[in-house]
Image (cartoon, rainbow, N blue to C red; front, top):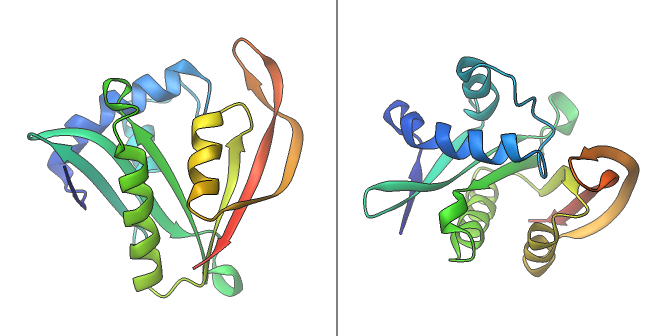
Length: 161
């Protein structure tokens, strides 16, 4: 598996992953009714942010983006988001993307990373981020409407780089 910078041609592989993850409604606050262009504009991070793809045998199996969590005085803290193709889950794609994004953020001069909205019932992601050094620093109760579980919390997770 190769992890590299996103190119415009990669969107054709990212879009189905995005659609699958967002339409499931279990992990992202993105609106499943957004157009493809709206999804592209939200997912493909403008500079100074960066977007990556994980490619296996010529196929995009995952994607991530990283950039400043806030502008100006908050721009030394990165944030990132990750999506893995349903048929590639459990194969280490998320971990590889996570490690790559952490290394990239560190190299880009960020001092720490904060995830603003990790759905508390997304146990695979919560476990992975904790294994990669993130701590849950707070949970916003009932901030996410899960399609089968009802209102659940959103974790704010943080780690120094």
